[in-house]
Structures are given as C-alpha cells and as structure tokens.
Length: 581
Image 1 (cartoon, helix red, strand yellow):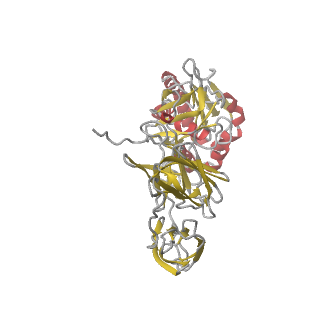
Image 2: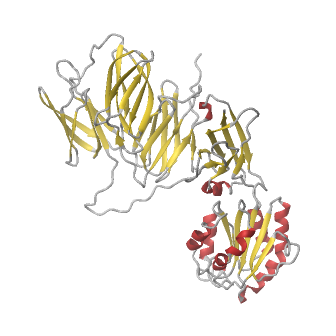
Image 3: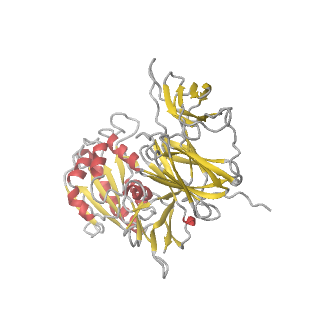
C-alpha cells in the first residue's frame, strides 16, 4: 500500500507579518521610450562531431533580438551560457575545429532556452561510474561563483575536487554510482547539495538560472523547509513566479535552505517539488527591499523541542488614553458633555478588566472618581481651535512619564476645527517618542460629513488631518455635530478594551533542559490572515522577534513593528516553538 503524498511544513515569517502589498502601477510611456522587460537566457554545449565529447575553450557568440552581441568561451564540458538577454529570436555561433556552427534560439522572458548540439551524445565512460556537472550562482549578490572549490564527498568518505570556471561551471567525471554530497566553497559563498550518480550519466546541478542582482525595488524569498519524514527537505526544487511573470528557482541544500532573488513586490506563486511525492504550491508576499524569510520548522531539529502558546486577552497589556479637547467658544457644549460622560467611560473600561490610565489636555473639569485618582493626569492648557495636535506635541514631556512603556497608547481628539499641524508631521514626531515605537491608535471626534468645507452642520472646518490619523491607525471616528457623547464614549471604550496579544512571551524550559537560541520560531495565528512564522534574531532589524538574552534566553520579545501589528489583534494567538539542549 502506498501512502498519500506528504506536504512539507512551510511557514513564511515576516513581516510578514505582515502585510499584503499591491503591485505598483506603471506610468504611461511615450513613443521611443524603452520599456523594462524581464530578461531571459540561453544555454547549451558544443561537442566534437566524431567523439561526441564536449569541446572546451571555443569562442561562442550570441546576437540577441535587439541586436546586442554577447561573447563567451565554452567550459571544459563544452558548455556555454548567456544571461540577461532580450526576449525574441537570437542566433548563436561557435567556432568549432571542423568549422563554424550556428544555432537559432527563441529567448523567452524569465526562462533559459536550451540548445542541443546534435554532435553531443553520451560517452561510454567507465562502467559503474557517472559524473556531476553544474553552474553556481550566488543569489545574494547576483553573480556567478567563479574560481570556487568544488568538493564531492563520496559515499566511502573519500573526496574528489575541482574548481568552477569564470562562468561558475564545473564538471567532475568518473564518480562511482551512489549518493554523494557536493560542496561549493567560494568567496562569501558555501553550500552543499545531495547528488545521486548513476551509471554512465552526468547528474546536472543547475544553480545558475536567473543569476541577476536584486534591485532595491525588488525583494527576495529565503528560508528552510522540512521533510515530512523528518530532517531538512534536501534536493527539492523551489520555484517562484512573481506578478510580472519573472521566474526564478533554487535547489534546497543539505540544510533544507533556499534563496530566491530579484522578485517583484507583491504576491508570488511558490512551488516546492521533489520526486516522487513532494509537489506543493503557496502564495507568498514579496516585499520591496527586504528578504521575506521562511523559518525552519523545528521538526528539522533532532534535539528536543517544546512550545509556549499565548492567546489574545483583555488585560494582557495596559492601555493609556490621552484626550485633547478644544476649549474654544464653539466647543462649550461639547466640553460640558465630556465632563458629564467621562466617568462613565472610565468605569466601562475598568469593568472590562483593562488596566487604563487617562490623560486630559485642556480646561475641561473632570470630577471624581476619575478626577483626582492615581489613574488620571490633567494638564491644564488652553487648546485653541486649530491646536489640538500642536498641544499634544508641545506638552508631551508633561505626560509621557505618566504612561507605561509597554502600554497601548490611544489618542482621542475632540474638536470642531481643522489642525494647523499635518497628520504626517504629527506621526513622524510621535513615532520618535520612547514607548510609542510599539504602535499607537488615534480616535477622532471631529467635524466631518457631507459638507466639504465645515464637515457637518455645526462644524467650523472639516477635520481632514484627524481623520487621516484615524484611518492610518485603525482608530474610530465620530462626527462632532450633534454628538451623543454617551454613545461616542461607549465606542471608544470598546475600542481600547479589546483583547490583545503580548509583545513579550516567557519561554521557561522543562526541567533539565535549556532553551537553544538557534532553534526558536514564533508563529502568529491572526484573526485576519493566515498563520505566519517569524524570525527570532539577536537584534531587531524590521519585523520579527528577538530575545531578552541571546545566550541564555528566557523570553522572546516582539520587535517594534511586529508589536504594533499584533497589538491590534483581538482574537489571535502566538505559539513559540523552542529547541532545547
């Protein structure tokens, strides 16, 4: 009985956490303007007409569809290759000893066209022996790996060695049949791959396809996969096709690792295949200027492992709420309504189990029990019609010390006028304050609606800047005209009292073992998206997690970008998988 095909565990981490990106729109072009196209390539061999063996050191010239001419020299096995070619018909010419040879080829965008020289044919070779040949690309740099040492570790423990040529190609022949390991060591590059050598055949280890540099407006995918039967998934072909149709592939090495370069931002279709039973397809978001990492599933590790899970809950993180209330003449009724309803608002938050502190900037009187309590801070200042954001910035040193470093911060602006400070300037300023790097939310009770000037019937001016901040931070909005403050404050209380995920998770190890910092992953199961596994690094450099102590970790801590993202997930969960030693 045969078992059903297994699927490798494949968990993208990122920032993924992230975020779905739309492909950037292309501007219209004018006549005569060169359009960006995805290049292709061509590859083949030139062989001796009598023996069928490859001919080395021959001049090979390719004339592309756009008239450009590329030149190369055939490798030891007669192989040649050209990358970065314009799509269309091309002509390849080689100067063989018996005279020039010419081949026609059609170069396809994002693909490598293969030319078969009829003179090439299998050689008898040594009975019970075969070989391995290939081309190697360092996808991190987009350069072919030349002058690299190639070591074939044979099944009996002995080795055979050679070097790659200036095109990153190599050939090792007369290898015994069996399973061996090929290691390529070059400047800034070292990878090992399993190969199976069969009688009279050359095993191709083609790692040179689409060897181009990754531009700043493109991204990469990398990571490691695990074999369903345990250990790294070795020798699997991982292929990605981005939104432009560009295709790149890599072979997983002895660590199950792969790297895919030069992908356009946005969704990419990723296929993982290995005969006879691995064939799985995923969609992964590529981020411009960033490597999206697929974390190693700890089933790859032979050592012990354990898991810690946290779910979103109210009270996991404290909440700090900063009100700023316009006290200009047109706002008298609103200030009275705030005074009448703010204690009910505070009680509603407390009854939810949320640990909250409240700051108020303005002249509104706040009676007990909130007024005068240890959870309340009033900064008496006159807030003019257009100054709510300015007041929050100018007085921040008076209230930031009252706030908790690990709290979720919520701003609430109540005004019937527009701000003189832009939303962009306010955001840039607040993001630089200590304690706000983990995210904040802005709620707006302002003038907005059908009136493009005043927003609504009693508004002084449409509150565009406040609305922008609320939209950017997923805050609530409510029109100030004829506002029912009991209802408005209920909505704000609900927004600040939702459950949240923690930004720090303790990882206590079972008795007798110690957490291994090299084998830790954090999986986020968010309510609004798929499960995402994220990196745990020694330091933060974008989305992900880090350790409280890299040598002897006792907790994982979310990096600021990730902390901000998960703080708004009211029903998700976090699972930390920890290898141990």
